[in-house]
Length: 220
Ligand code: TIU
Image (tube, rainbow, N blue to C red):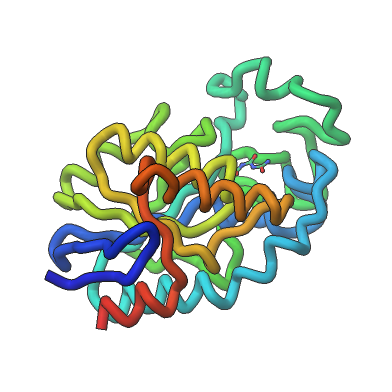
């Protein structure tokens, strides 16, 4: 069986059961004027991983393996937005408010789109999720079962929020998860590093971690 050289130890997979999950690489998190910026973050930090994430996606496409994209966003009528999420903190704009990329974090608005550099191909599955984890309130689990996937490689933003939450949800459901360490980023680089350490500690309590080159090498 193919192997990715990873931390805390080698990650073994079958080509028939591995897929890539790219979390929330949306304009609302990565470009100025969106949700990430409304929370007071420097969104330019996240732009650094675009080329690596693009290479990782291309590697899965070239190998004929599934690529699944997620988008954190809400229905236009806000019926899937708990008031606690809308009102938390004191954001300069709240979810649903009009901004330079349309209404903040609302499905169908330009800001909720995946950035053009990483646009899904026709036929690639795109999950709209109301929570931080991709399983909550979505058909993500059903889609993984239909594809018969068992091992998931994760990329995207932000490492300690939506990426880590989804990895933990997947881990509890019996999936083996591996985080691409140079295709994930946080508004707080120390949190990215800490999240990676939390995942691989205690014998891979949540999963594995490896750089994109190590992942692509094993796919070839
Ligand atoms: N704020 C933050 O770091 N992240 C989010 O709100 N969502 C995701 O991580 N996608």
